[in-house]
Image 1 (spheres, rainbow over the protein chains, first blue to last red):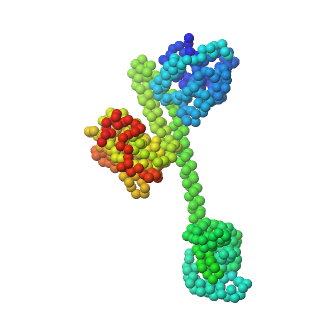
Image 2: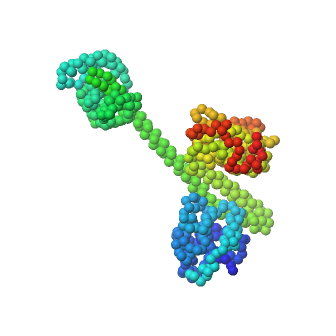
Image 3: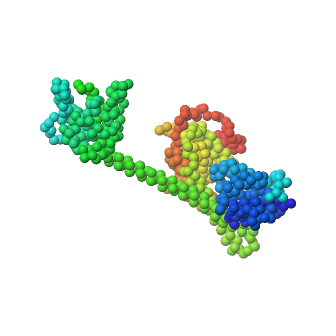
Length: 147
Length: 416
């Protein structure tokens, strides 16, 4: 069964880079993209154009986003009984201590800094795949059906 | 000095005539003794009794406050110094006037004085007791410090401006380098992707061009990361705590273990003291200096020796000595500049930030860094750090074995 990932990222360059890296790491992944926080929440709540959106197995969340930023998206996900079981991985260029602490306070499942070098970024994506897509047991019963 | 007809030392009229006569007699005696002294003083002088009344004054005082002598005598000193002086004359019940005064002798008190025309100016007064038949009088030497105050205010303003612009500059470097990283990451990543996927599939020119783009982007990334590291020295840390320089060096050598092993360098050190430092920055300092010593090696086995000697002013002077390539004295200043390099990138990699960071770290610690060298004869870098405020750990008390790290096993170079 293919794994569904929601990537919340506003930079097209980063989106493509992440797609390329996942293509190398695991071809069976469906990578969905939301370009801002509002769109991400609509996707997760299957609103508007996203009525048929799948429930993602994990969320990759950038912090600096237009409209609704990543911290608020994270807070809303973790307040929502239905959504909070979806592992939410922060994937951002910020490596400030304040952001790291804030995200864990908001129950982020882990915090990853985007490496500057392409090679390192590809290795990071591969390790996301190896861990979250392969080794981790995800809750099966909520994967489909529950909206 | 012009001669003065009326007695210089004049006392206030007193209701008690006989007492007044005694006092006058006494003052005449005092005048003989103090006249020259009072008038020779460059400052305005007033003598005040315990009741806060002016009993004596000199010509400078008349000039400075714009009063005639008779307008000041027997008047409250509050007329010319509204606050802070008269209050000091009144001894509280627990202390004698002498005790109260004794505390203020030799210490200048800054107050505000008022002229007859109501204008005010800053003064510094020095108090001293004067024994007399009337009891203890207080002599106040009053200096107009308008010019000094202006200069001080000017200086403070300049310092504040300087601090602000320095801070802005530091912030600017940080923000610029941080924000530049983002678009650059895109350029670097995609040129690398291009190179990886299309190398040999286009033509030879395309391969060349892509290679130059990849190289340029990755070099710029290193520059920006180094600039970020450099600006971080200014914005982070700098809490100077009691730090073991021995531990800091140990950590630095641990971080350098790869380079030490690869070069076969012999790194030795004397027992090192505790100093007031930011441990991370001190580690970085040792790491950059020892790293350079190994990197710019001459023929033969690289040898590096780190030592510390006590110097004046409660400091330790550290030295990092190597037998490397050495540096021509004409470049001594240049090498501490940001992105200054003496070699081609082909000969030695690096952006030229290392010694600039060293200089900034040492300066953040209130010291300076210097180098002694001749080409072909190795280099010695020296810097001073304040001694630990606690009882410094004497070299002889130094622990013999490394505790925290196991570098001594992996870096045979370290055994003396």
